[in-house]
Length: 89
Image (cartoon, rainbow, N blue to C red; front, side, top):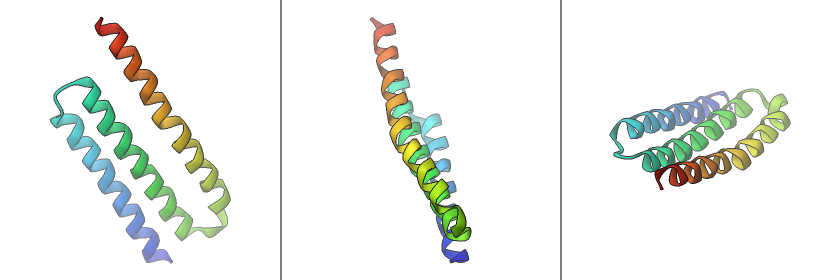
């Protein structure tokens, strides 16, 4: 399970790297926000899954943390996007 956890953590770090590259390469604020939200959500979930594989006694807490991230990260991105759209008018 340790090596599987390390693979998940590595994939999560790669998702964070993709997010960083996307923030540099994307042309406008809304596309950057979309890249940042999707990649960091997936990266965080993969890292938490890797930690759960390495330390199974933390699984319930990590599951709750994952659910919280899944519920709040896209919502906060949506609120920021609406604020940007309103500010552009």
